[in-house]
Length: 465
Image: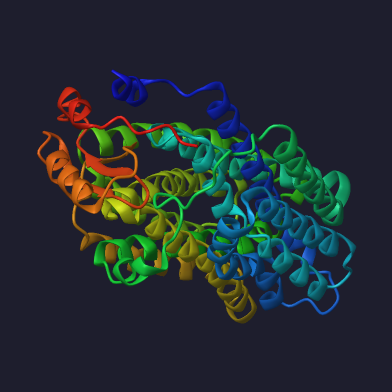
């Protein structure tokens, strides 16, 4: 009976509090990274020593330091503790924001943005969420954090232009530093302290598995996808604010009037297609179609960029595609990754995402400098075309979900036997039980899963001390 209660029980108040407060920390940090995106390229044109390349570098420098340091931060947190590493990361993020706020040259802002990215705590926040939630509820906690990321991006696009109109871009960086302080307050007043911190294969990268993940063709396609998606996003926002101001004659402080309805429309528009992809098992055709839609929107921005209403209509298509792809890519990685390697696969995926932002910034800046802002859209359209062609070659994603169940430590022989027995449960497509961490990592078809048979096989783990 205890195994059944653990499998089906709701989140405890502590788990819910941990998930919501960590989502709040994640959201504050992402707001700080994204809020300058819709305004910076206009502001930076008037800075001393500014050039299109340096503008792109300033926007995207955080991506390089984040990509380099996110996996080491996770490892350091295993050794020195989650909260101390998150504290260090948030202090670095705040320091980078202050450096950027006080800088009167483009070089200072580049340094500030790089320092912001050096506070690479995204993976540590995920690991702390894993420490504070049972395996059976880990997906819910990660979903709350995922929602916070999407919400922070939408809020950033709308509030960035408004706040910069009131306090200027330097003031925006001071606000971002304040958000880092708010995150620290949440960390020490709202986030519980875990009694035990351990390595979690579902949220953290393991170096032994890098080779398998990096040479898995399906995962490589998805890693390229997130790389291309964030390359396109960052490059687009080097050019887009300039186009809205110089071509469509819309002042920077008024850009929110475009972004607010665009995000509202796009968030509602993508939902039926996500349902179609998941419920009707049409993930691949929907996915490829929306990559093509992303490229078509970029081509339309290249060809038609003089009227604010037209740009707004095209951006609604762009963000419908972007939001759907951003939401489905992590799910596809989870489905494609071997059951016990999800954390490693997601670590590589996140690194590819931040590298995409970095390459998009410097690449967009170079194209803007040599050919003009509108040609950034054309380059992004070509990247999306390449991605669509690559996506056409992928296998249709498996209709499976990850399920983690704590089974307790056991000898290798017993773990292997339990793995084989779990594979015999209808609806279980993959089962790995590892003796060293006492967790069963399953891939299941939820509509076929025989829950009673699964629960019957589960041992009752000994209480943790």
